[in-house]
Every structure is written in structure tokens, then in C-alpha cells.
Image (cartoon, rainbow, N blue to C red; front, side, top):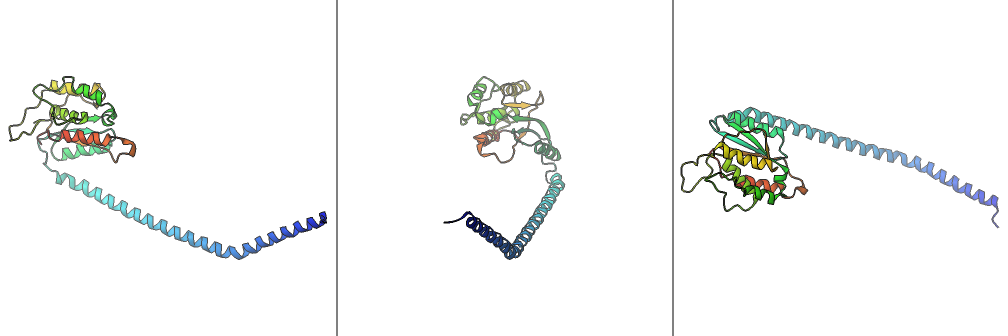
Length: 246
């Protein structure tokens, strides 16, 4: 029969053995364990230092490249756009700094900016195709002009329409022929106002002179959930491209 005293003595012996084992283990393992941890810590520190050096080197190269661009750009583009005018189109995600830089380079090239038109989220997300179709078919195409019959997407047709309205020489016919005169100010204003009032574009000025060329400024890489935004902008730009006389 196991007495309470014997049971208590057994528990005491087990506890003493555990304590002894922990103490002995700590003494035997603490040295190698600490040494290993110190070694790992040193390795990590060296890796961090190496990454810092790489980051600093890349930052320096980027600064040098930017400095080179800033110094050489005026020489590279000098007089490339003398006497030419440009209208800037920007997407909703285009950075203000990028748009300003484009305008600055146009000026350095001797050109002028007639204005900036912003394509809205409603335009680029492609979820208002029927609404845009209704605008395009509302009789706003300038007299004497017509949209390309090869364009079936509304974003492409909008690019074609804005090319007709805002750019000089709305077509490059084959065989070559004299440039097509630009549409008048009233027709141009009608096209812009129709697209603005229905939420497809915005702009900050009331009058846009006809321009020789157009530039589309976009943002960075689109997220995975961007849907057809990239395709909408690409079709718009492709339809805009045949217009102009720069």
C-alpha cells in the first residue's frame, strides 16, 4: 500500500530530478546556444549592411541618371517642336508631376500646350459603354467629318472623335493630300462639353485651340483588379494616333 508520505517523497524526487536536469542542461547548452545565436546575429547584420550598400549604390545611380536627363533633355529636344502645339490627355492615375514634366519638355522643345484633358474613371473603367455610345451618336461629330467605320469600341470612337475635334489634319489620306482644315471653335467646344457634361472627361479651360499633336500620359502599372482600364486607354490612344500633323 502506498502511503501519503511515500507518495510525497516520490513527487519530491521527481521535482528535484527535473530541476537538476534543467540546471545541468542550461549549463551545458547555454554556451553553444549563445554562440550560435551570436553567429546568426552577425550574419544577419552583415546581410543588412550589404543590402544597405546595394540600396545606396542604386539610389546614387538613379540620382545620376535623373541629373543626366535633366541636363541633356533641353539639348536633345531643342527646336524639335518649334511652331507646333500639343494637347495633353491624362488618365485618372497619371501623376501631376509627370504631366508637368511632359509640358515642360514640350516647352523646351519649342512647342506649346493648348490644354489638358483628363479622362475620368467612368471613361477608363469601361462600365458605361452604352452611355458613351449615346453621346457619340447624339450628333456631336463636326460637320463634314465622320468617325472611322473600322472602330467598333466606344473608347476607340471617342479617341477618333477627339482627334477630329482637337487636332489639325484629322486624317492622313492615301495618296497624300493637303491637310484637312481643323474644325471651328464652336464644334470643338460642342464635342468637349458633351463628353464633360456626361462625365467622361474634365478640363480646366473653356477654349482649346486646334493642336498639331497629342500626348497621352498614364500612371504606373495597373492592379490586377483594374479590369479593362488598360485596354480602354490603349484603344483610345490608338484611335487618336492617326490624327494630327506634327
